Every structure is written in C-alpha cells, then in structure tokens.
Image (cartoon, rainbow, N blue to C red; front, top):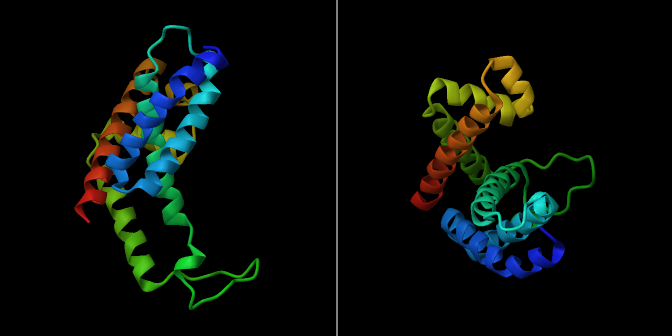
Amino acid sequence: MTPQDFEQIAPEMRQLMLGVGRDFFGNEMDAEDVAQEGLIALWRYCQRIEAGHPVRPLAIRIAKHCCIDLVRRQRATLDIDEQPERGFAPPGTRVHPSPQEEMEAHELQQALDDAVGRLNPSEQRLFRLRQIEGLTLDEISEQTHIAKPSVKSMITAARRKIFEAMKEHVHKD
C-alpha cells in the first residue's frame, strides 16, 4: 500500500478505531487516544500491506491492542492533575497512589487476571509467553513445538477473549 492509498483510507479507519475505543472505554477521550495510536501503528504497517488487501480486520485488531495497551498505561501511571493535594513530586521521588487508585488498579488487575484465568490452559500458556515474557512467535513456536500460524491464531483468540472480558468489566462500572 502506498502512502497515498493510506491517506485515502485513513479517515474511514480512524472512525472504525474510534468506534472500537468507544465500545471498550465508553468515553471519547480514550477513544481518541486509541484512534490516534492505532493510525500510527497502521501507518507503520502501510508499506507491508498489499494493494487491495482488506485493511478493516487489521485496523480493528490494532485498535483492540491499543485499548489493552492504554489500560495498562492507565494502571501504571498517576495523573498529577487528579491529585492536587500531593503537589508536584520531584524526579526520583515515589508518589504513592491514593487508596481509591490502589483499589481501582487492584480491581483492574483482578479483572485482567480473571480474564486470563478463563482461557484454556494452552491459550494461557501462549498468551503469557507472548505478552508477559515477550517471546516472539518464532520463539514460542520453537519452545512449544506448535506451528507458528497456530501459535499466532491461538494468541489472537486469547487476546480477543481477554479484550471482551475487559470490555465487560469496564462497562460494568
């Protein structure tokens, strides 16, 4: 796909990614972050995509991964604006989360752990190897003696299940 082709489809893909972000988070601000990061990721793949190849499934997959990444970042960082009573923390100073933030982070982590726990054992193993240990598909295939396309398919299925479980958790609150 050429950069010109990408420019043609970018507005449609942005709307698609916004929809995934809205469905997942239920708010416009996070959906905008998902769309922005998703388009950047899609742009990186642009030259590897053959002309005429359907881009929608890839854009949806990228947006889902961006949602999960955003949840991880939100869990791992503190927004200083939401904690004015603490003021600015100089570099190197550890800012402790409020009890509310700790509870929310714990609930989110529990929901993620529960979602992973509902996967079948082989999906759990492959998901953990890929997402937690950071192994490549080739390394996982070599270690598990499962064909690379099967590894990729199983990890994709596991991510989809986790995405749906996290989406239910977010909308439940």
